[in-house]
Length: 551
Image 1: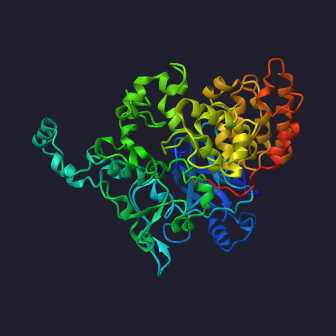
Image 2 (image 1 turned 45 degrees about the horizontal axis):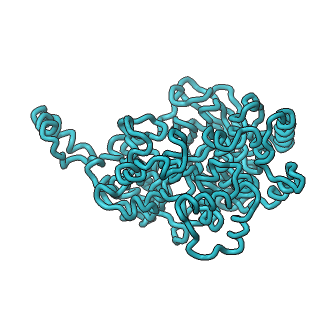
Image 3 (image 1 turned 180 degrees about the horizontal axis):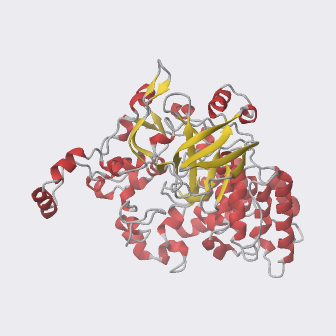
């Protein structure tokens, strides 16, 4: 999670490297085992950001600073240099994309508007919350300096198990250790999340995997969050909800963070979603779902951290055995197909993080009317990309007898009656987060099997010139997942004229692959031909309100 910067800690090359970021050339170099970066003065940039100066990095003089810490080692890696206030650390304006082996501007690594102001991110008050164990900002307000400390850099044992000194002292006696293992009795000197209630165990995860603000902001600036595993999390943190006053304390607007029905759509913030799930909110005792029902930190792969030996549906089956035993009679999907999995329908990919969509941890049932009213994509149309919202409503009504509890609004009725595939509408007309989430669906193998894979390129091509760099990245990944596009070349951070050429090249390739194409999945005109005017109209109707996903 966080490491002292060294040649062995960084993933990318760090000598004689130049990276363009915020209109400036950033230079990376080594001095022996020290890593250095020449960048716009981060302290002047921070002051300019807070003063509302546009493009603050363009006018700041270039300075050389030693890189002291790195954050992230799985997908992205970020870099921190010394600030001017005590041991303050400021974020360098570049990010290394590990899978792609390249540096990009920090701005382009996240889903945010192209004209979003630069961030003045400080490790001491931001990343220390979740990328260190027991981090304390320790701001001296009178001197205006930081003396920040952390028990350990990164996420270590005590983050989940609490202070371990007493446990170590007790268990140094081999007789005590033997007796503890023999009896299996709890050791009161340490916290084992598996022995906590579902709510408290989930809150151990939620101290990082949630969107929150401090309940006592003054106390946070001095001693951080006064939380120990097993405590009630809400004593130290206020979890964000769409209409809570706390949303005013974060940079992103509430409509960026939540779907219209209040479901969090920021990846890595699973506790906010879980708490809105009936499996958690209405469960009790062993029938209350917790994070540990599916995940394990010690017996899992780093990606997703799903428990070894369990299917992805294991936690669902423990309570919903009747539905599981009914098989296709309940799911109405063929045995062995993705549609028979509980999570496929009840945990769709509607959260965004790290250039992809991830499963929502708000566990509920798909609803066409819910999508029409709130805009949150549903599992059916994220897999059946070629189907309308009306098709989904009819299928759910036939299979499960679902009926609206009240007449739909005029706007919802229009959405249900639309003759255009819902995923196409969302891809072209949704806000930036919706476009990214749905673009990711266009590259998933199960969606391509359900929808065909010979038409999606026509609409994905439009997103190669999307205003948001992150949307372009997701669309390009999905385009390359289609037959005939695996070698398609484009750069998601290219200048506008190059992006437009990439769009044109994708459309030209689409025209050459027309032998068995199913244009019927796209909007059709009165003659049954692909309706380019309708595609253009959807693009013109794109939701342009600024969207920022604060991962």
